[in-house]
Image (cartoon, rainbow, N blue to C red; front, side):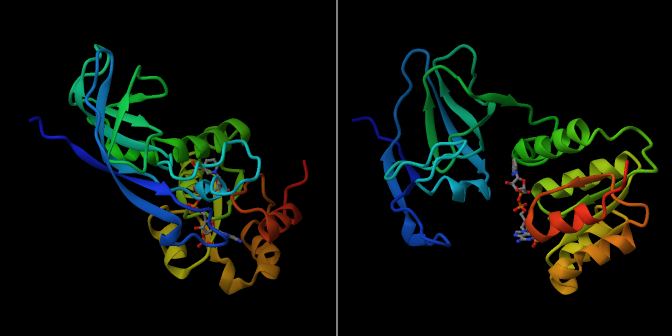
Length: 247
Ligand SMILES: NC(=O)c1ccc[n+]([C@@H]2O[C@H](COP(=O)([O-])OP(=O)(O)OC[C@H]3O[C@@H](n4cnc5c(N)ncnc54)[C@H](OP(=O)(O)O)[C@@H]3O)[C@@H](O)[C@H]2O)c1
């Protein structure tokens, strides 16, 4: 008798109301399929849990479909090919895919999957700075914000500045020579922004008070803001608009 391989998946059992709890999810044992001709089997190593996933746990219409009940959730992950009957994907290859929330997955044809190079950076970087979050910051700050080299006259304000996207946006803006100001929700995050990301000014919006963000920006961006990288909207957006440079 051949031993059957068993894997685990996390399924969405019921739609959360408010903050998700453990009861909304189920840890399910499943048998792992054996690849047929043209298929390959992958074991996940890293996965990313992102804020946007909460939106997919609602029934409302959005740019992405809702997660299905009693099925594994989806999300970015990096895994390694364990068995392969597909010439394009060899045993040992590292792959970035959207088949997170499960230990093993089988691909029929390799569509929607990207090979990643473990020699370039630690493989988990492809879920962060070299993945969707890094790309979001890169496109936002360079393509939309149009930062140029040696932008010493340019002031950039970033909200949720120590977050996955914000932290990369801040560091790119610093590389481009900008005066960079960031807001975050704790002293520890503010310290990280100043000591590690090396931005020019950071403040804790909870300590300052949301109604005082505008005056904090007046002080830290005396020439006005050229580019606001908005991660949160609300009072931060209003305060940033109050302080934009006049062109
Ligand atoms: N992750 C992606 O790949 C991706 C892709 C496209 C778009 N986005 C968008 O980019 C933005 C940032 O995403 P992220 O993945 O970087 O998230 P993140 O790292 O989790 O950052 C979110 C942070 O926002 C801050 N925050 C939450 N509520 C706030 C409020 N009411 N006022 C001010 N700050 C608040 C919190 O930080 P504090 O503790 O500092 O308050 C929280 O940690 C989101 O709008 C997201 O939808 C993300």
